[in-house]
Length: 302
Image (cartoon, rainbow, N blue to C red; front, side, top):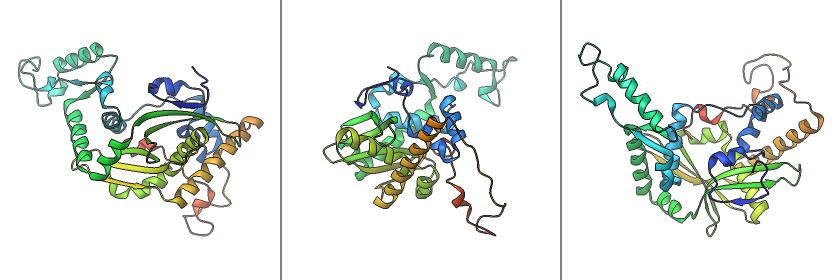
């Protein structure tokens, strides 16, 4: 089903969702840089996940979809601690993961479990500790318990541009009218900056907008942020109305630019500045030249 009908879909595997031929917000945000960058993102959508992203994906799965975690992941035994893990001369290695014995066992294990993602025991234990921390945070615990819809896929038609759009929602509590987006990050203390830097308000605005078109309900946008390492600091709050209004305006602007590029078959790149200056020196602040695009996965974990 590469072109799905508009609607709300539950129990859709991510790979199937990703194959749907519709515009998602992660792709659209490349247009903040230039329309030429958006065109490239559409034509070459495959991107490799970093180690930091894998930690976030694992933690996200364990929180949002715990029953499916074992179908998606498998924990690698600690081959480095095995008594048979020796150098060719029979001595113990300084680096246990550098021996041929270890590398062969690791490769064999990965081939045996080719259908699942292989994670280390330390990483898996760390993510379980993160879940325990969430369970101790009263607000987070209550919100996770109340959300009866998880990993919801949306498909809608934007009424202003006719663009077929899609979105993947973490958690929805219809009774409370909440959309909860979980982020696993390195540092939750500065997350306000991350909202701007990674356009989380625009991402959330697209989800809220799509849900309202399909369901006629305006959900409250709630961000739950948890650090992916001890002591697993947690922050949780609704996104402010003014911030969401800015996010929705930018989302609609990007959709409008995308439609014009499709119609004209012209995907412009950067514009030249009048002159080069430091930000705030000798001319307008650089923010006026356009929003800076920073891929979410460069610094955040999910």
